[in-house]
Each structure stands twice: as C-alpha cells, then as structure tokens.
Length: 103
Picture 1 (cartoon, helix red, strand yellow):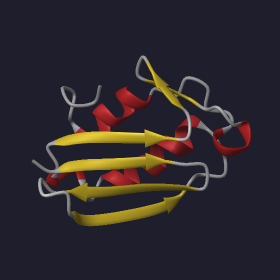
Picture 2 (tube, helix red, strand yellow; picture 1 turned 60 degrees about the vertical axis):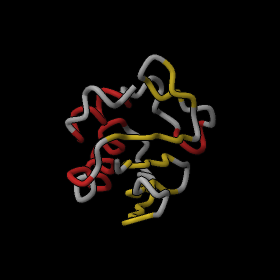
Picture 3 (cartoon, helix red, strand yellow; picture 1 turned 30 degrees about the horizontal axis):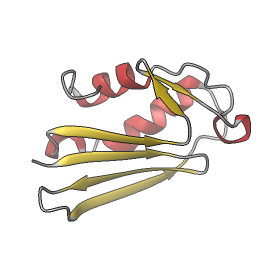
C-alpha cells in the first residue's frame, strides 16, 4: 500500500509517496504560503498533493501545529499565523478523495 505523507511546516510544505517497503517513490516541496490565510494554505496543499494523490491509498500528516478534531491549530503565530482551526482533514479529504483515510 502506498502512503501519501504530508509535512506542513512553517517554512515549507512537503509531500512524498512512500511505498509498502518504506522507500520514497516521489517527493515534492513548496514554500509555506507567506499570506497565512486558509485559502492560501488550501491552494498550496492542492498544488502539492494533486500530482501525487492518484498513486496513494492512504494519507499520513505531520505538522508544526496540533491536529485535533480534524483541525490544524497553529502553535507558533510566526510559522502558521492566522490559521486557527484550519479544517485540515476536511481539506485533505476533498483534495485526495480519501474520505475514509484522513482521520
């Protein structure tokens, strides 16, 4: 099973396809949006995962904030400021069509 691994950081967003053997199959990286708006983050995540999502069967997420009840809570306003309660799980479900795999 191939995993789409996503890292949401304060300076960059990264995504990789990880094979069942643990090997990275493909990797992409974008700067974290400077505008710090939910729309900018959603657009950046879309650009990041769109080329990869068709090859994955599940999603794993790491973040500079806390993911609680499906929302990203940015801990450091200098990194992901303006993103209180960003609907991360809902956004990734929409972008990847993995409604049963984004929890």
